[in-house]
Image (tube, rainbow, N blue to C red; front, top):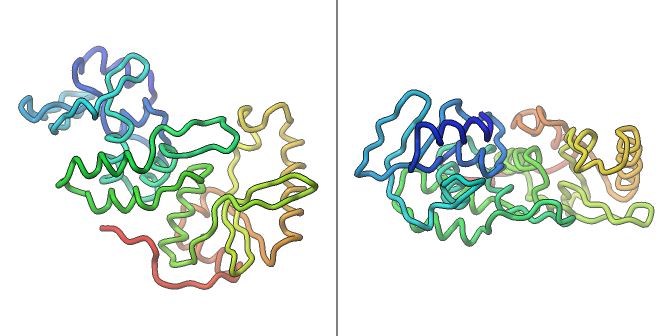
Length: 266
């Protein structure tokens, strides 16, 4: 589902009913690790009912003016309401990736945060009681302003579910006179983990004026420089990061201790 599809359906069939859930997430530019449903989701007052029509799934819910915003000329659920609604229902990795993006603070200033954890918690509290509230609170509490990608977010969930120690995110190292930041650093074990993504090689906004070959060379020199400063180093791709068992095996090879899961939800 694309932003254009959501806008077209809403303008034609769902006037006055703001897009919600996955449809609102598309308009806000939030990521998903599992794909959004094909139908457009919209929010309507309880008094109007929640009967759906072909292509549109309506959710009857209490509406507050603070829960509504405007994105590209369309009324839509606010970023806070969107995140809380989806945190209560999405799979855990997708929910955390979405919440991470909403509050992310990019040290380079390329991406601005859409909201704050405090505002997410305020919206969460204002909706109580609701189904999935405990799960939504766990997602909000676990979210981080330092996650650099959905791969990092999903990997962090699996790290916690596996019971590995909590890593430091974006830990700085100096390589060839420049400060670089690693995705995950375990201080006690002096070990680094990197959730490797393809964006740095192919996304022009991340690559800058460098060619793909230059990015590969820069990454190799960066990795070699970090490896020389730590006890152990590993990296993994998206499929490994999204697999709890495969990432567990990778981090056990790194020598990390394992204990009880750190992320509790229901």
